[in-house]
Image (cartoon, rainbow, N blue to C red):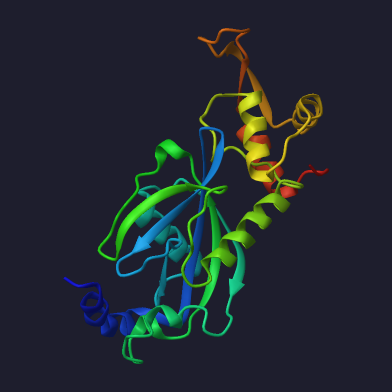
Length: 248
């Protein structure tokens, strides 16, 4: 079925099912092969890429709507989720539906609540639904052209994530259960977009006291096998609530 017909058929149902003029856009980050990546989708009849999103049901909390949207797109609920900004400029989304009737649900003016999410790469199952033709991870250094104001939403999410590094731990939702210190440093460098001094990074991250050094090391390398670490979840979660001191 043509994309236009799908939207037109579902428009009346959407008016009855969802809260008018309110939407959600999600910036889903992951870490793979030393690069920070973001989940992107390509909608049918659209040349540009977009971010996953959706609408809030009339009988649903906003955070629950974001969790539902993430699960529908990634197949998992075990994702760190943070509301970070509200986007409501004039004509931020209506232009994508210029050729549609003004009564179409999707053509209305929407104020969008932005969420960013952190997902472990191997746990995500990419879902292509009836509205899209592609769902792919893209490196934040090689982003495609975005539709609507989705580039603005992405930029604000990345800025927020970088700011959060100054006072909250990051990593539990982006790294495997066991990781090396160089892998953790590469994650921080990928988020910040800059190199960090190895010695300073090690001292600072250990001073936060959120890591547990394991009695095992990474095997198979040509050089000395690096020690493996895991996050102390009790201390990690406490740091999420209470914050950390310092900046990168």
